[in-house]
Length: 313
Image (cartoon, rainbow, N blue to C red; front, side, top):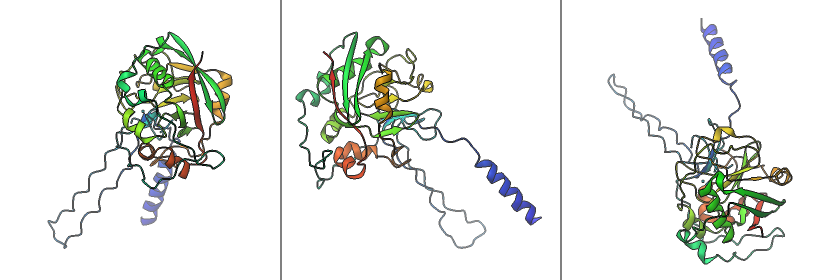
């Protein structure tokens, strides 16, 4: 009988392990928190009525990523996608407060290893309330990256609030020296957390209202804001590598697209780190918010960067 029971347990365990490969979580703009295991019951003297100690409650999970980085990671603001297992990968942004910047941190290094000076911050970028200009009906943004250049075609009627926010950020020089910190092959590439921690403090909660969902689909080449829930889009974006239609009704409203030639550049972005911490080997959004590019240059040297983004003439 004992041998039969062992054989049955072994068979059931093997069956349970044969599930599907986890899908990436939605793109969230929040850092994900690791779950803590319940505490072991406290040891008590052997007593017939003694009850085991209550297990410790699990730590709350972050709103997060649905690129990179909620039902799934949302494009993360870390507002990026959390890919990890989820009904939908969302790029994710975390509710967790960013870690304090390390006072001993060294300046970020250029590609040749020499330190870079901090990029001067536009005065306008320090006050999100002033960046409310209405974008043109259509406009193009020229993007330079460490892997090459591409163009984003924006159509305001697809998602007016998203198109306006992107226009104001680009026009005022926000997207400079920005890492593609969450790149999930077959899903999306997430970016938007600034290399300067003081700008992250200013923009992290400067959210805009949602646009109507489902007007356009998250197909390959479309660009969308990451989110951590209703009306929480800020500065994090993701570019879809594939047709991620499951994101359409989750608050992810595309506002622009990249053509086939441009997507060859996007496809080449470094994806070796995969999902962000704690689910994967990639950067932790909380630390990136608080320490900026100093953290990335020290620990994730192979990441690709958006060098600059400018409104096309």
